[in-house]
Image (cartoon, rainbow, N blue to C red; front, side, top):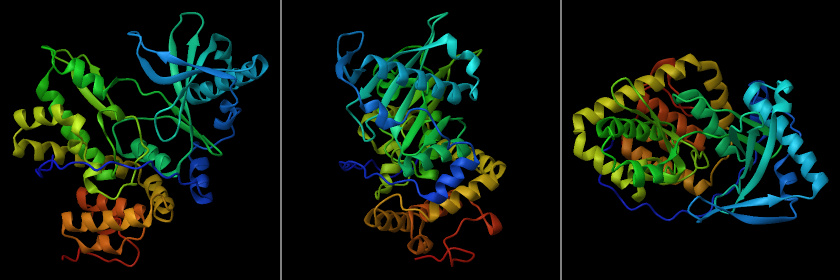
Length: 365
C-alpha cells in the first residue's frame, strides 16, 4: 500500500445520479447487459405498507419489508422470478416452477434506495437474493470494470432506468473486522496480503468509497489454512470523487484494524511486491478483454459521470502524485481513469490509453 500517512477522509455528500446515454446503452446491449425486463424499479415502489426488518438479535437492519396489494403482488413476484432466471440461468424458464419470491425489502440507507428480493427454492428451502436499483451510469461503469479487470465475475442487467445486480456472497467487511479478526484461526498474513491487493485493485481503476460496509470478505478453506478474497459490493463511487484518498480503502477509519494488521505483518518491500503482482494480473486481464475494454473506454471518456469540479480536483491530485502533467489534459473522469490505468500498469506505445491529442512519454512538472 502507499506509504503516505493516513489522512482524515472528508464527509461525502449524497452522490449525484448520472443517466445512461445512448452510446453506453448500445454497449450494454451488445454485451448482453441491456435487455427488456418484466419489472422496473418504479413498479416496486407501488407498495401499500412496510414494516421494519429485524436481525436475529432484534436490531433494526435499516431494511423494510414491503407489502403489496394482492393482485399487484402476484404480478410483480412473477416478473421478479423471471428476472432472477434471466440473471442466474440465462432465461431457462423450466426452473420457474421451483421458485417463489419470499419477500421484497427496501433499504432506507444508501444512494440508490435499493430493493432486495429474496428468492427461495420451494423443494429444498435454499434461498438467494438479487437487487433492484435505480440505474446510474458511474455505478454501471464500475460493474463493467469489475468484470473486466478484477478476479471476480459479476452478473447484472439494465432495463431503462432499472439496474438488476446479483447478490455477492461474503462476510460484510465491518462484521468481519468485528467478529473474525480476533479469532485465533485467522491467517493474518494472508488477510493482510489480500487487503493490500484489494487496495491496489481499487486505486488502479479508481473505485472509491470502500468503507468496511461496502465490501465483503470471502473465506475459502484450503488444504492448509483459509484463503481470503476481498470483494467490492458497492460500485456507486466509480470514478466519481475528487479526492484521490477516497480511492484507497486504507484511508477509511473503519478499515483501520486491517490496515494496522498490514503495517505490523508486511514490510514495505513485500507490500510493493504484492502491488506489482496485482498490477501484473490486471494487465493480463485487460489484454485478454482488449476489444471490450477499448469499447468501454470510448463510452466512458465521452460520458459525464461526475461534476466538473470533482474531475478537475482529481486530475490535479493525480498529476501531482504521478508527477505527470498529462492528467491536466484530461477532460472527463473516463480520461482520468484510463490514464491512471496506463501509468499504474506501465502500458506503453499502442497499449497506452492517453487523452486525445497527447502523444508518447509523460511530460513532467
